[in-house]
Image (cartoon, rainbow, N blue to C red; front, side, top):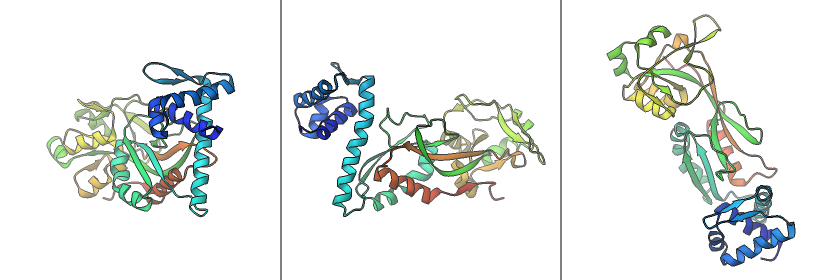
Length: 307
């Protein structure tokens, strides 16, 4: 590989895998050949791109800039070849790394995964379910499913759907402890809360016939970091939880969970987006997945559960 595009590909693989040996195995080159090609780039640019250590390779600030541009160029070359090989049609292929919350992943992506992969058999889905917010570039992730307002202006987003929040409990819990008739009654109930910092304290409610939202203090013996865990605890009869309705709509329909304090629901909406790094030429596998999810979930607006 004595051309600049080939050198870029070697650099991208070495930087992403953080290893000359791993990059060499993937590209069928010796580790010394990989090292020499990267040194050639550094000599031509007059700057260090990678810091070599006995454990791993680390990018310098200049290396981070070079990697971002090189990834784009290598991807465009690969996509151009795919278009030509596909008779002018872009064929989605390759590893698609998706990160999603546990609740959304269980409720939507896992049931739809087989259908997506059947439509795009040359795509390999690498799916991570986590309720933590990740850095797409640092984690080498193509798409993340996120809820709430978008704060990172460097990311592109497609809205999937929106869902209001709902307070729920199991019939067994309500039979044992009574059904709250007013938010003040929550003082006598075990409320399952989140253990991460929120912009407000307590649960939002709205008095019937008014538009003013107020926050009711709640307490209990369980705090968790996931709506999916709140759902499981409510199903087990541990207490009352308040989460996005999309987590529990099927349970409400089945009668295994019951909405409470609906007359006081604040009707606050949680918007779910598919977010990805913005490029002029979006990889076909990313576009295919986002379009697929929008088609399957787009326009959904979960409102008051059926009585």
